[in-house]
Amino acid sequence: MSDSFDAIILGAGAAGLMCAARAGQLGKRVLVLEKAEKPGKKILISGGGRCNFTNIGAGPANYLSGNPHFAKSALARYTPRDFLALIESYDIAWHEKTLGQLFCDGSSKQIVEMLLEECAQSRKVGGDVEVRCNAEVTAVEHEDGRFAVMANGQIVTAPALVIATGGPSIPKMGATGFAYDLARQFGLKVVEPRPALVPLTLGGEELLFREISGVSAPVVASAGKASFPEAALFTHRGLSGPSILQISSYWKPGEEVGIDFLPQSSGDWLLDRKRETPRATLRSVLREALPDRLADILAEKLGIDTELGNASDKALRAAQERLKRWTFRPSGTEGFAKAEVTVGGISTAELSSKTMEAKKVPGLFAIGEAVDVTGWLGGYNFQWAWASGVAAGEAL
Image (cartoon, rainbow, N blue to C red; front, side):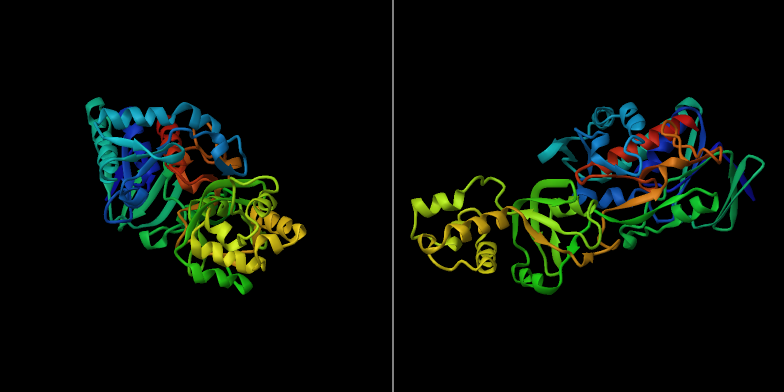
């Protein structure tokens, strides 16, 4: 038994469903194959169940890629405002959190239901989108300008095939490196994938910080040239929290991570305090700005246990400098199991930035997280999914 379609999309996640809806509404007959038991599983768990569906400020500068210009075209043609207009056309209530992050007031289910309804709308214009779940793809072949996909023992064919199966982050959700295997099968280069937006682990002397597991504080975390001012969280394994997840995408094994524990302080603030309140201790001063347990452990590590008036200016200056850039050398990350997304993927050099089509294999497309384009934490990866999905959907 063989079915013929205009396009076959592998993966019913954010990018795959967006691509299917756009192609269907342009009159295409589309089949979406999803190996999970239901579509949009990652959407459903995102944002604590409320889906951080975009970031109002999303632009090319918020993405990591081997080619920093690649994402410009798709992001410019389908913007956060475009997705917001779609949300509002379905009367989905939303709110903005910090740093431009947009969430549903209700549930992530509303986003999945909206995307499925967008797919269903294609029938009004002569298109059709069929979503088949529990579809295990076992073989993909390409011959005479058509792709043949074997799924659950049945062969389906189409002149266009879209890889939208994401990366290997969150394997408990069924994520795998299938997209990369398929890309390599067709001769496309893959940028070595690694976990991103992931907690960092600490070892050695830094294990002392495990004693304050659960404590968080607003900091500026940095790795290489990247820095992010948000909260850091100490865990029983190392470091997490928004600022750490952000810089994890930039951090490379062996490198240091810098933490500014007092981003609001400047100049010789500690010497000023010495003159103002000479009987104060470093511990008590730090407790004014930081959680008590964190203040205590930092004061202990700095080794200043006398009153400020009895501490030398040199020692206080050294403490100031260290608190502005306290360095950790992570032993690693918590891996793909805890990573929200993947850095790396199908090389952008292989794809058209306008259509997401493979340059060497006409009819083959790659979108979303499968591609070497990775957004910051805060709705950016969803915006890339929508934008790249629309770009491919319009080109099918």
